[in-house]
Image 1 (tube, each protein chain N blue to C red):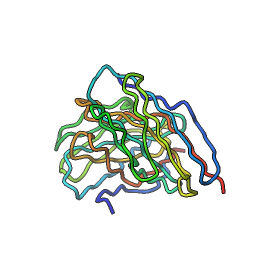
Image 2 (cartoon, rainbow over the protein chains, first blue to last red; image 1 turned 90 degrees about the vertical axis):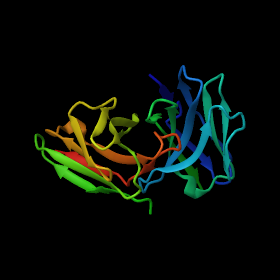
Image 3 (cartoon, rainbow over the protein chains, first blue to last red; image 1 turned 90 degrees about the horizontal axis):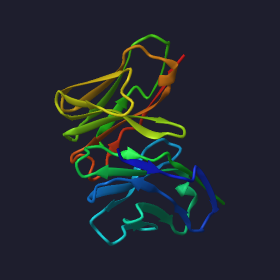
Image 4 (tube, one colour; image 1 turned 60 degrees about the horizontal axis):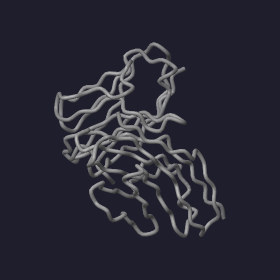
Length: 114
Length: 113
């Protein structure tokens, strides 16, 4: 079974700094999808970024980018120029090509301080 | 808003009582999911559906059942609620087995006393 591990339960940075959240996963598949979700205090789950494993290029969405290292099974999220509104829980998730469902990591609670 | 609603948003119930949570979508997506969120565990899959009357178990399905009689509705039932089922429950939908990610409902906070 696939597993997803987020080794940083909590992180805290100052506004405008860059922060990187770590995620590793375990799979024997070669084709899969990876995601980062954000959950602010409102509890709503928001898709931040998506990466397809067969694409070499790292996905980017505005201030959010990923470092996808397929051989190392690592998928980290970098937030540049962090803002107070980035304060949230962040979840890494994996979906194998034939799995029909996402497997989530334990989450990282990120606090952006003014 | 996304076309997925969960009801109720909050519920307090007593141990041993049955509870049903409802997920309703207007997106006509084939796949629907129920997850529970607990501190330190992230989101864990309870059950999912890949079509009307087609459901399968997730990793934490004990004590839960589901039904999907229409494309738009996916019901989660706690047959006899226990304190260990106190959690936040999320419904999610996807048109494509989750390859594009999910759209989530707003969650239901369930407290079993």
